[in-house]
Structures are given as C-alpha cells and as structure tokens.
Image 1 (spheres, rainbow, N blue to C red):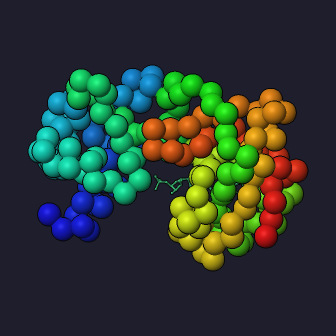
Image 2: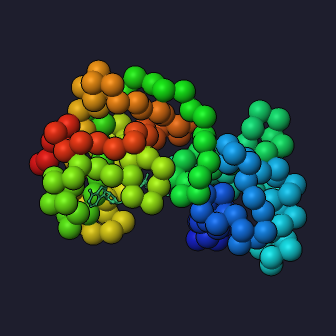
Length: 181
Ligand code: HQG
C-alpha cells in the first residue's frame, strides 16, 4: 500500500473515531473506545473494508500516533482531537515551562485579543517542539509560532493533560500567557 493510501485510511479513521462515528453507524463509548471487530465490520458494511492487519499497520506507522489500541488489543480510540463529547480520562500533569502553538497569521490579532480558544475541539492543543507546532499552523496559511508560558499557567491553577502521543491539552490560554513573535 502506498503512502497516500495509508494517509487516506488514517484520515478516515480520524473522521469516525473523532468526529462522525455515525457515518458508519457506530457509536463510541464515553471514553472514545470502539470494539475493533465492530469497527471493522461496520467499515466493511459501508464500503470501507480494511483488514485487521492493515488497521494495525495504519495505527503503528501513523506519523503522529493518533490512535491507540487498549492493552488487550480489543478496542481502539483516537488519542486526541475529538469534536464529539467524550472524556479521554487523562490524568492532569505538570507542563514544561514553555509549550508552543502554531497558528496561521490571519488568526494572530484575534488570539492577541481573546487568547487561545478550543474552537471545535475539546481543548487547545500545544506541543513541546517548535517544528510540530509550525507544521500545525501551516495547514491553513503562513504559520506563526506562539509561545505559551504553560508552567506559569499551571501555577495559577490551570489544568493541563498530556496524551500518549505527547500533545498537551488545556481548556484555554489567556492572552496574558502568550508570547507573540
Ligand atoms: C485558532 C491536528 C482566532 C487556532 C494538528 C487554530 C493539531 C483562534 C484554530 C491538532 C483563536 C483551531 C489541533 C482565537 C484559537 N481567534 N483563532 N481566539 N483561538 N484559534 O484544528 O491547534 O492532524 O481545532 O490557532 O496537527 O490547529 O488532527 O486546532 O489555528 O495537533 O491529529 O483556531 O489538530 O492534529 O484549529 O490543531 P484546530 P489546531 P491532527
């Protein structure tokens, strides 16, 4: 299978595991999990069949490790990025001093006024490395790298969570904690 095909399958998994499980007639449990057999059967019924081996390959090779199997390999879920209402159950964690957020240039004025908002997702997404953040920002335009004084926010009582694939999540980031370039 070529890279493009793998990416297409990964995007489809993101769609059903984060946003619209109803597209293939499934629902996720309150923590975002779905039984792997049920997922594969429902995909097949909707003309999107995938073998278990292919699913495992897509999960294993995913550039951002977007998906996880549970310990027994019975269930699967997306690690973050949902727009539907689920509780991932991550433990609160102490963030590093600085976390980054990449955004397209056209959003910067609004962010300077309102801070970072979670928009359609459950959380604002932040990263430890600048490169990943710039790649995120580049999806919609010329990227601008914002530095968030995350440890200071944490000390002021804001909660942070970290996903197994090292995305840091928080409810919102007030403009006062953001350093603009
Ligand atoms: C912006 C992808 C105006 C925010 C990526 C972002 C990431 C504001 C956009 C993950 C704003 C929301 C998340 C404000 C925030 N005014 N714009 N007050 N506050 N914004 O996609 O962080 O590939 O929901 O800067 O790689 O871009 O899906 O968030 O530009 O890790 O795994 O509003 O999604 O991961 O966009 O991306 P998004 P994001 P996956």
